[in-house]
Length: 193
Image (cartoon, rainbow, N blue to C red; front, side, top):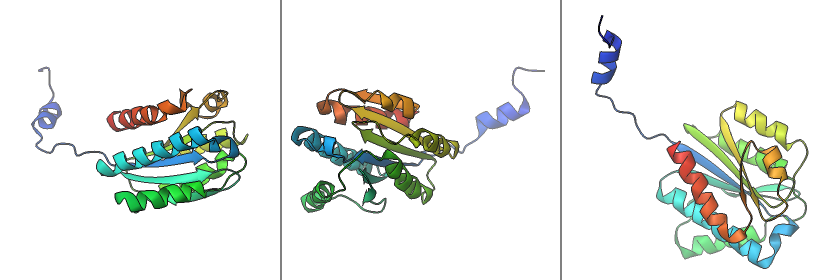
């Protein structure tokens, strides 16, 4: 018997090469009162716009959800942000997004519903928050992950230790200016995993 079986040789001689895996991302942004500080809010909006632009350029599906006391869809998967006019309208919608508490569970539910419409090989939800959310969020994250949706928490600013407890896969960005860099790091890691 040789080192390779007949099946191994067939596999190595196969002419079908794997195709690129499809990805869908939902960026979920905390729009609570504490996130509305001028510098904080501006950095968060710019990071969301950059993320949407990069996923559009890479021809990956992306959507956006805003949450505070309630959640709402800010960008659907089939919407594109092309040109200054569409970007300005997106920023206006974000400015008018719900404000109040930090109900990340509602944001996750809306993101989950969006991902259920997708047939992507890899589904990811990234929650960007500066505070502790709802107590039952961790259980919902586990349910989403059991269905194959990767849920990543990104705590931004000081005092976001709860993010590590709620989201098994989590990142910290202590400075809001680093938010775009951390989001791009997450994106690259998910694409290349």
